[in-house]
Image (tube, rainbow, N blue to C red):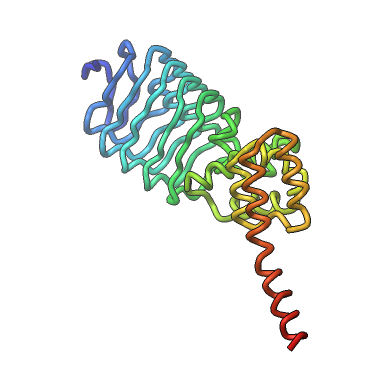
Amino acid sequence: MSKEQDFIVKNGVLIRYQGPGGDIQIPAGVKEIGRKAFAGCHALTRVALPEGVRRIGEGAFFDCAGLAWVELPRGVKQIGQYAFCGCVSLVGLELPQGVKKIGKGAFAGCASLTRLVAPKSVKKISRSALQGCPMSAAAPYLPVKKFKKDSRPQAAQHFAAARLAKIEMRQKIRAGYMNYIRSRRRRLYPAAIESEELLWLMLKENVVPQKEIRLLAEEAEKQQKPAARAAVLGYGRQNRRPENAKRSSACKKKKS
């Protein structure tokens, strides 16, 4: 439990937290979490921000190694640079509608952050905002070209999972991933069989041409994935029907 004397607040800005950590509730009336207000508080595990907070300042929760859960109110507009940098225990975070900017290094080094949900209101995400985060969190919000070449197939897998989960992402980033998947489809077949989400996306978007169905089915057989093989062959039969119908119709016209 947090006590009022644990917080130093001036003109609505929380300047410094001087409590023991643990599970805390920031008091009402706070409008901004100030620069490095909680920095280095390793004992902090959970924090709930009150309605009315508009900004989380630079390094506000920097190096809060034990912080695993954060509740952000709807009014937050900006996540400052390095705000949650080094919060290695933070597993997931849902940013409220209204957040417009995520600053440089905001979540850098959050090694356990596997799920990040950013709303459509976000207009700017700094390039280094998610540096060092697991790919599952970063992929929906960073262009595929930001990843090293040998990591891009894995990024495509996480992108596909985000699409399946209907996570909002920028149209430009979505288009970049789809262009990458279409242009590198044959190289991505092993990754697609390995990841049902990527396979689902490639089949749904008709990325796989009819002439490569056998190749993809053989990859499924090689990886001993009978369900994936069945899905690929089913897709092939379904896409072949219109062509067969046209040929059949053409044959009937010739006979008549």
